[in-house]
Length: 231
Ligand code: ADE
Image 1 (cartoon, rainbow, N blue to C red):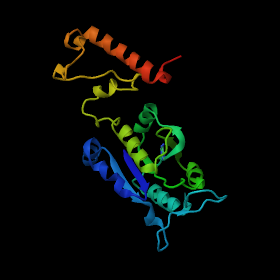
Image 2 (spheres, protein in one colour):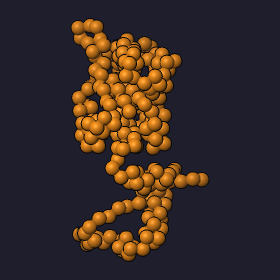
Image 3 (cartoon, helix red, strand yellow):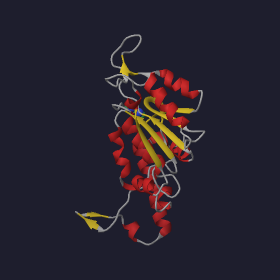
């Protein structure tokens, strides 16, 4: 999968060299390219923002550097003909595991990391006539910009690309995979600070263990995330 990231803070993405994603980059499973939006500015101050039409607080990202940078990415002969432009924003659709799965099937994702009060709306409107555009929100809170949200989405999507996670079975028993939160996990020692591992897990009875884990999933989901339970 090819991943392009457009940002005024390329340093945020140095962490793509770390851990599983870093390995996937080394082996060529993921091809990430970070573009500095300011490279597409033409003025001495490399300006990327301006005051909002209609007034109001904050600054809005100017459309021209975005247009230039995204045109260049789309014109790259190595780019896919059908990329998805992801625009992280608290005003976007809620990002979920189901969306991560969809995105893991794509050939190319382009992340547009906005700052300030966001990117001039015409950037999304223009590119929506050429490629698929997907505004995505991590949740109901506000970050300073799209960089951290992009990293979260890239990690959630990246680990679903076949070959990324060593043991694909570990993907099956996670939170959200079956619509429930995952069960609690334990490892050795069996007794730690006077806390015991639930005895059923030491029983060797696989049926009883599976039943206990499912019970725990239901209990946790009911207590912490009742909204996930079917009606
Ligand atoms: N940018 C700022 N806040 C965000 C959020 N909650 N999700 C995605 N992108 C964001």
